[in-house]
Image (tube, rainbow, N blue to C red; front, side):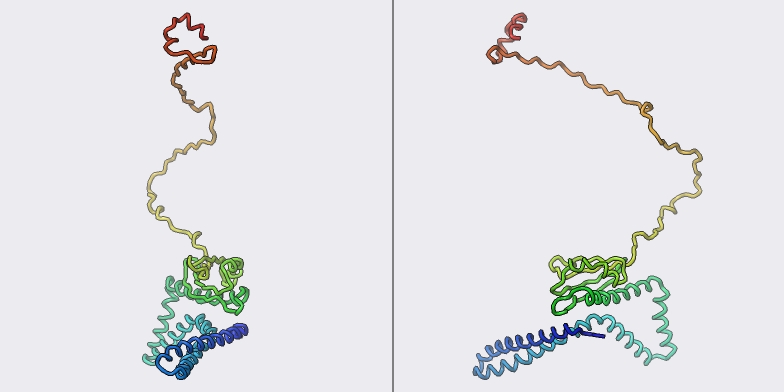
Length: 295
């Protein structure tokens, strides 16, 4: 079983050399410049070298063992949990009789197994540990990593009512669009029904949140409290209810609508032969017989 791939091993070695050279030169030059203000320039160069080379070696070591640190990060919860259980067992066995030791172990194991809510919580957190490794398998098998072979950094996970939620930090070379086209494969690898991907922060596109859904909670049966409110001793009406099934228009009483009376419109004044309207005073001063000449 390959713990660190050859591509990652070569990339870390190359990056470690570059980190050593850059750190040693930069730190050595800066140290020499500062030391030249107090000692001879030649002595300052030796002081810069004595400070820059160890600092560059420390940076080389950090970059070189980074793949191992990342691997240890992936197994940190399991390592801490195993170390805690083993330490507790050793301390319990060394300071208590055998009967007390077995009784404590039975309580620690039996109580979570017997109590339903505790058992479900332990199972949910156990799935969180499993899902982190299943996502790492997805990234290593069928999701393209960057050119140096660095996989996304899987941060932490917590249980949700429908499954698990995992936070992931992407490396350069991946985006959320690349992962959305492989959601069905991720769901199969995580033993889930569906997987959703969202950005965990608006300011950083590399910080994503994986919502892994493995069960449905909206279709569960809920006991309604309204059943207990109904009076079972109340008499039931024997008369059947008549439900209309059709509608006859003649049977419908049509309301009579009365419109308000409208007055006669005012007559429009006639125009003269040349197209102009007569003056109101002249028309009103003429007798009734003379007004016919204007029509």
